[in-house]
Image (cartoon, rainbow, N blue to C red; front, top):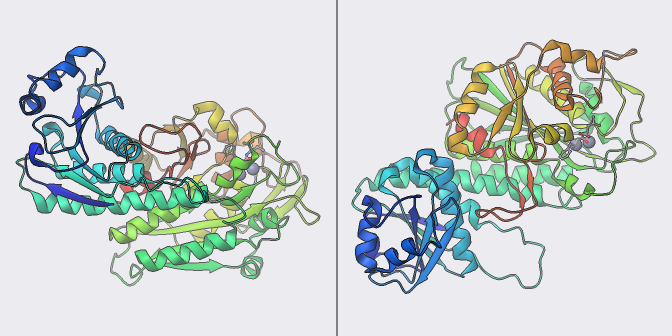
Length: 495
Ligand code: BES
Ligand code: ZN
Ligand code: ZN
């Protein structure tokens, strides 16, 4: 999809569909609609007074052959209430426009940038929204796959001549949008395709395109390093585990001095059957997405490399498959983790925290001074917060504040859960340093308490994205399936 900034009046833009945002309560006399009302000679007034379009967020109304415009269609897009509008909602309504264009088989789309949001940054989020919406998860369909992709978007800035600044933001938006779709495509892959080895192969492919260096730690090296928590999870599978270390090329040589080294650690369970503590079959297929945290870390790293971030960041992705077999780890087994701490494995379905424990401790051994982990860790988090907010826990209060402050930009909602030391009791083991489950009560928190044992005193944020990674319903601005949740949150933090 090409995205272009146009500093010319919307009436002159030739395209299959011109999308025009409208806020609730705006009338033909409102500053942003006056010109449209004049150009369309009564049609706009007709619609606004008909009552069928009230400009609620994501609602649309389409007019064919609008008078006074060179566009073939005019799409009014509800932008909701002006007072609560933010960049995240702009991203969504651009996405709504692109989804509408796809369903009408429109190839070229103009999007009118509302005078109230006419800043170059708007072009960035608009570009992200357009690219996100143009993605479809249909690569395995061999029939009835229509070419619905929108090919060209014009962002229309009217009289604003800051073309260079808008174009720079568009370039960044394309990078972030494509990185998000990359993460979605990875998470949507079935587990027979995306094995840990294939995850590593895809990471290497994307590294060439985006300027990353990927190091793959293989099983024998994990054995030498003593990563027995990670190895325990992978033992039931014939697929070998991989620990991916992702660095931004050239960053080691650069004189970024002794600035903090952030490690982004993403859970990469390519399929989570539960292992010997096997899951019920209902919805087990969703567990092909149990590597969504890892995909988000890889997508974010690819974007950050292309955006030439000045922050020191590395990515770690422990990639394994969790299956039952004659070799699988069993409830009651005790393993010694990379950190030296011992773990009694009560439930083999609490595998995410085991692989993350070794990856987090390994990140510290690489010199990470700040840790951020992203994981589809607990069903308990979905019970607590639904599929609206991801759970956020940790000890790095400053970073958590920044993450919270960015929600109106990223649109990725986070809700902080407590992490009092009282919760530690739940994972006390009689025979080892800790056990890997803490019971049903406060399950998202006891999982985080488990991880905390391995981050020790390094400032740390844990994002439990269970439930956020996969959208079964679809959205007016996105297809069903993987969401790429976490990519924008991580990128925004370092941008
Ligand atoms: N991958 C799951 C968590 C999950 C559940 C992600 C639903 C997305 C949607 C994780 O490995 C898991 O199985 N957790 C268990 C932990 C329990 C055994 C303590 C859970 O949440 O049931
Ligand atoms: Zn599990
Ligand atoms: Zn899992």
